[in-house]
Length: 541
View (cartoon, rainbow, N blue to C red):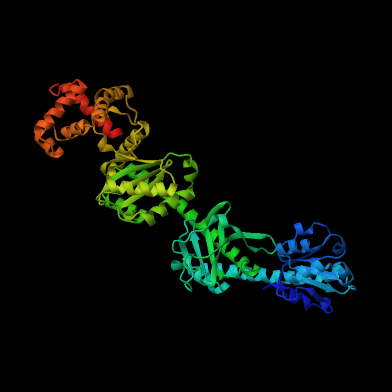
């Protein structure tokens, strides 16, 4: 639904008009018309605008001017018979070469008599487009009300606009797609080139609408390409509408562009509604967490209610985990919208989602890992990797409680905080810390994770550093030997077997350790201090 040069030439005011040049471009689109009243009109001309010019042919308009108009996608020039004498041969040659329309009209018409009927035709078409767009928008809303759902909209929209389309999120993943095209195959591994943004269409005022034009990864030899329209709620990117268009088409026509914009507005509305639902769900999750932390016993009625609220079975025993992001993005990432995005992300990518409980409180992710997940260490590692990917940051740490009954969650949360604070306060290279692995260090640290650093440094300098220095200098394995020795409860037989060495070799190493550290293993104080120093070293390395 467009106005073309050919349609304009059919108006009665153009009965005696003719093409001086560019008669092979009669299908050229026209969206507006203006009169040349300033010399540098080429700087202001809009795409598909028709220009009326007269005396400026004598003073300003030359071949370079025509070239600039063509580059700006000007639809053509209308002038009168009396100005032909000022049109140079260079202008004629170039205009014919680039198929740029120059239309000659009778001198008897004033400029206003020519502008008025063209403007009327433009307005009439715009009104028709607006009416169709309103009808299209109403049809979408009625469809949503009738089906009580925003889901599977693309197939209906595709039939209404005559183009296959899909909706993808900000991760370039398909959210919905019309059934008339193999979108899942065509958009497999698809990524939007965010640096290739340019004009894909124009609104009714002639202002540009920006988006992307890209080939799919699997269709380089096909006859189609993808026009991509960003869906935005204020400044927040929600996703993209991807439309299958002809490979030779670079600009989407106004009527289709307006429908795409209408569809995008519906999707923004959908996002707002879902955001409110998620916000309510997140608030309810916080209430559930508070209720769990105040449990003294878990009744069957409470368990059923929790399961209905969370959406999957509740286990009796959990590891309570706190994940904390430390970098500067932290504040902006904990908006309500971002919180539900995190939960959606976990639902999609964490394979044991039904065995965990996810809560977000005080800028921390609190995750209950069910006892049915056999390898809790691997589970923690997987969750950390997912969060590092999601936040594009390695500054994420976790503290994990001992296995606790659900009604002991408050105690478990304290243990998790204690473990998390330990690695945050004591320069540990670890990304996560189990509370049970702190051992007797739990007695030497407060709930903030602070320890008596002077005492610890003294132990490390006295009992660990000399062994490390000796191993480095003489290429020995005294540190590993003493670690295995303590692990095997001072058993010469088990230690020598673990190290694959003779008992006499072990005795020689033990003697060497005593000499390096100036200690005696028969002295209980020396043995205890070395054991504490090793525990500190192993926990903090």
